[in-house]
Length: 186
Image (tube, rainbow, N blue to C red):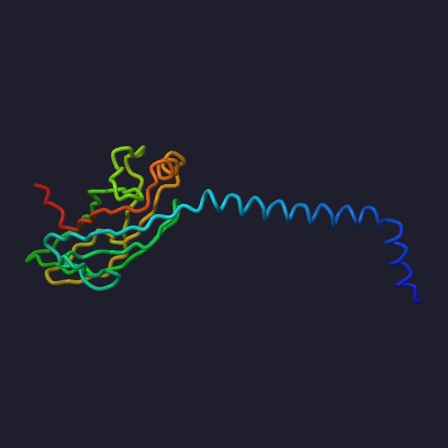
């Protein structure tokens, strides 16, 4: 036997209890973390399908992620969102005004429904559980000008909101997004 092999064997003989303890603790840690992950995923895998109806005044919306519903309205399907996650959707906005305009974005008619289709919005613990922003910088649009905007939706990760979703069996939500020119300030 060579010297290297002999020294490895001697090391194992001398510290076999320590090596076994390290292996045991490592395996126990892996098994415990896997069990906790599986347990938490069954409780905290909250997801909410959502649709935002686009309402435009003084501008046209088209393209991007925008689709036409059967009733003629335009919608953005946000897909399934999880508390604390961000979803982005894009669309094009064209000015129909005869003069330069500055756009504003509003979210309204937020409705949460449970698994039976009942509206449970009145129990909402937060005033704004959704955060809707966009990449529009506030630059004026000239008549007929078209720009691409990206809307970003973030669902609150507040513990009160998560408990609301669980306790009220919330399965989906809807809201209206309004894009229109700002009223002139006189």
